[in-house]
Image (tube, rainbow, N blue to C red):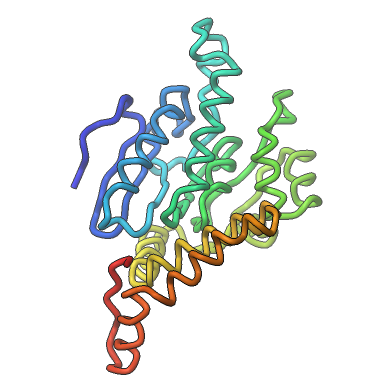
Length: 266
């Protein structure tokens, strides 16, 4: 089911069973992200998260050239205040925070070029599955640009301080295999198998208990942020709620009856 268009047609949402698709739809510019696209991402996530049938969200790029090739540089010299550096950075921060904090699992489906802001978007997804032909890079040092501190913090979680320094200091393009070896990507698959691999992963996640997945996501985020012990109480409550849920009862019944459980998220 294709939903009504967002404020820009360069971000598209689609719901297909348990999968919500969020597509960066700017193939003429290799899905480079404009101010309007950044602005549309939170609204797109709101739509996908509001549908109870959606168990997993997949972020992808339109066409066969790129996931996201960076910022839309055609807007760099735009004098419109709504497209200023400060405005662009604020919108990017909000969009990436929404991606990272989505209550549902988010998978980046990476093919072709994943450059600059594309790496930031992918890093803020929960999982990253890439085609073996994908190329990843952060070329800020070639352009004299900075990079969001929150983005660097997230990359440190994935690849460690030394990995972040290599990515930024060299500004070189990394193959999917190299990105996988350093921890930036979860899985690499043949390009022809990418969509099938992502769909299979979504199907596996969708078949598991939503409350457990949400509780683990909440707890991992809290622990990664090194929040005070008192703030972890909410994570403990979420974990206990899983044990008291109807889904847990269903899981026990299904196990004893040797059948696949049907979870409903309650």
